[in-house]
Each structure stands twice: as C-alpha cells, then as structure tokens.
Length: 280
Picture 1: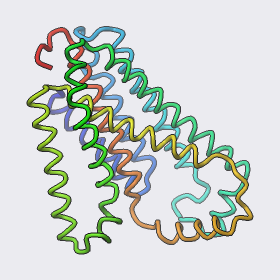
Picture 2 (picture 1 turned 120 degrees about the vertical axis):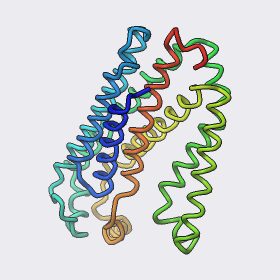
Picture 3 (picture 1 turned 60 degrees about the vertical axis):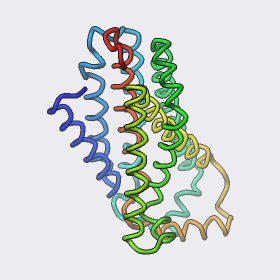
C-alpha cells in the first residue's frame, strides 16, 4: 500500500488533473495525470523484488501507454486554434468540416484509442498471469463489482445534468447520490472482506475498459466524412456550442476513471502477484 506521503502526492496530483479537466486546463490535467502514472510506475509495490520481472514489465508498460494516450490527447487540446475562447458556431462548423482537420482529429483519436487498448491488454495479461486461486477470486467478484462499477460511473457522469432535470430539486439529487455511492461502497467493501484484494482488480479493470471503450467510440465518430452541406449536422453544432459552456463534467469523469482505474489495477495486481501475499 502507498505510504502517507505517496498517498498525498497521488491524491493531490489526481485532484489537479480532474479539476483541470473540469475547467478546461490541458496543462493542469496533463501534469497531474503524468505525476499519478509516474508515481505508480516507480512505486515499491510494483518495482519490489517480490514482483516478477515480466509482471513488472507488463504493469509499467501499461502505465507508459496510458501516459502516451494522455499526452497525445492533452497536446491536441492545448493546440486548439481557438485557445481558451469558445469558437462561434460558424467557426466550429468550418473547423469540423475541414478535410485536413478531420484526418488529423481521426488519427489523434485513433492513436489515443490504440494506446488505451494496448494498455488494457498489458494489464490484462498481467492479471492473467496471477496464480490460479487468485484468478478464481477475481472471477467470482467480477460480475457484481464490474456491473455496479459501470452503473455508478454512468450515474456520476449524468449527475450534473440529466439526473438534476429528472429528479428535480438539489435535495433529491443529493439523496440519490448518497444512496447510490453509499450502496456501491458497501457492496465493494463487503466483496473485499470476502475475496481479499481480488475485487479491487475487477473494479480497476472495469474503469479502464470503460475509458478505452469511450476512446474507441470517439475515434469511430471522428472518422472523416463529408459534412459541409448537412444542415442537420450544422444545427447540431450550433446547439452544442450554446449548451456546452460550463464545466466539462464528462471529461473530468473520464480522467478520474482512468487514474483511479490505473491505480487500483496496478497496485492490486502487484500485490496479488507477490509470492508473499497469501490472503490477497
């Protein structure tokens, strides 16, 4: 487990990354994410002699690929031709219908999605190399923990907008959030008491898989298409510009899911892979 100083560093860097993503700061998001993933890569639980060199290589390779994906995404974000000022509808329509820009965006999204898929593959192979009894624990815990993690993730993403409109008052939203998050923590903690560290691996892997799926979906939707004469598409762009002017909650949730998933998967997998971890 991380020491107090390492835990504070991880929490501080993760908070910086999430807040940066929430308010549109690529530099804060990138710096916080790189620090979190870098600290995980050199953590004694990963680099210790009890972890085999092949597992260590897989875990660190997965973290490196996650870092590359984040750097590519943040670099493109920082290089936006409009800077911090939101573009006008006509400027955005001209930008997204430009063939050169379409190709560039598609290749960037494809690179990000590829890095995330390869990272998940590295971590998946590291999990698959665990002793058989610990794999059985993960298999028993994965269905409940994985499904509840996905449901909770969707709930958090919808919390500021869709659920507020559905539930009405802020009090109703707060009560619903407490019930869902509290129930999720209770189920996970009970699963940890029953199966040891195995549910943590399932939880982290589910979060990373969700982020990778979102990146693949973004890459698919950004594939080059002639849209310049599509009146419905231009109307949709105009609506999105007028609506998406507040904090970027979806990006913040994705960044939080990626960092939390990486930390849980890497640290828990490293612990389960050690020869001295009998309970897991």
